[in-house]
Amino acid sequence: MSLVVQKYGGSSLSCPERIKAIAERIVGVKKKGKRVVVVVSAMGDTTDKLLNLAHQVNPYPPKRELDLLLSSGEMVSCALLTMALHGLGESAIAFSGPQVRIITDEAHTRARIQKIETRRILEELKKGKIVVVAGYQGATLKNDITTLGRGGSDITAVALAAALKADLCEICSDVEGVYTADPQIVPQARKLPRISYEEMLELASGGAQVIHLRAVEIAKKYGVRLHTRSSFSQKEGTIID
Image (cartoon, rainbow, N blue to C red):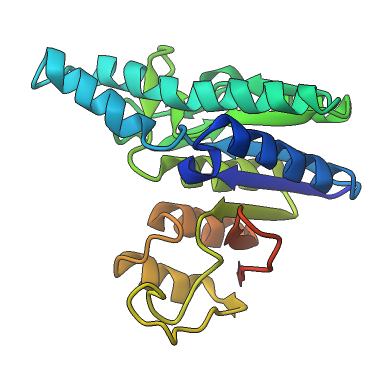
């Protein structure tokens, strides 16, 4: 049975209705006979609101505690999506990054993943469950919570796909794929059906925000096949390999 890792961004999970719609989409993937691991970002602009709160109480918040605060956004999305899946009659389980042992270095607010222990995820997949993981976060060997920086959920998804040897990693957001130019600026821009890792790395380093640069680097290093697509439609997006 093939394994798919899907990542859903904040705009895809911005309200209860969107969370329920994403849950239905995930169930549809499972019904096609696939094992599914889902990585989620915080709802909407939650991270910005938490940052604003932090700076209201301290203009220079300590980074360790800032990571503890910011990681809570993804945990809310993770728990709510799993509840929505249960509401559809599916067996699912939610995990924080530390719970599935995403081990990082100690660089708070910009940590890098050093190791992922896949045992708990694989055990739950064997039971037929959908596994939902909070993106953007991990923990040090001292069990201090860390975050991976902006766009970190992309990194979580691709790193998990690599560790689990997934057949595909889908990055689902509010854009339909990779275009020849920004379609909001250039109306005649074309969506590319396929692009190489090298071409995507060049676009990402030039400011394209379809997928995090470090996520593409990990995908290239471990041969993770990527599919960037919209979570608001079933249209095919762009394959990166």
